[in-house]
Image (cartoon, rainbow, N blue to C red; front, side, top):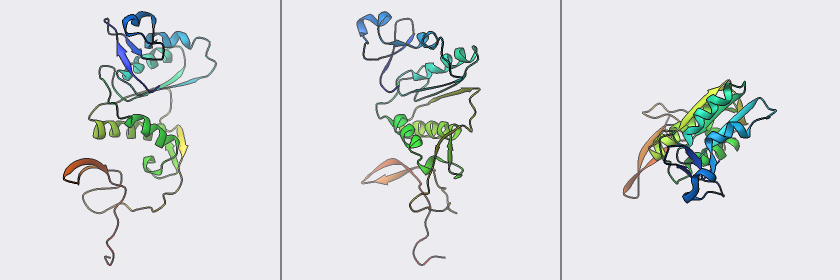
Length: 193
C-alpha cells in the first residue's frame, strides 16, 4: 500500500483507500484491524505486509496477530505506528529499487538481495533521507528470503581505504547547500597507485 494513513478519535489506524470519507471514518477506508478477517480462508503460508503512509507501522501488530494463526508474516513500513510519514516516497522508491535488483542494495554483493538487506536499506533510507524511523517485524519469515537477483554494476567501484565505504550515507555540499548523499564507491585518482 502506498498512500495516506489516518487515525480516528480512538487511535485506530485507517489506510485512506479510495472509499475514505474523513467525516465517516468508522465506515470508510481500510481499517488495519479488519485485515486479519479479510485474510480468513487465505490458503498461502506467508504474508508480506508493505506500506508507505502515515502510521503504517501499525501493520506490526497485525503481523503479530496473523502469526498466531500459523502464518509466516512480515511487516516492513515507512513509519512507526505512532508517526506520520513524509510525502517523498523514499520507502516506495527503495522497494522499486529492490524489486528491480539494484546491486547497491545487495549489501554482501553475492547477487541475491534478501529481505533482511531490504529491511536495512529501508531503515537507513528513511533515517538518513527523511529523518524518521521505519517499522520492521518478521514472524517466521526468514531474513535470507531472496527478494531479487542483482546484476553486475556497470562500473564497479571498490571499497575505499579512507573515512567512508561504499553504501555509506554522508552530508555533501551541493550548490551552496548541504544534502544527504550516498557513497557509490571509492575510485583512485588518475596516476595514483
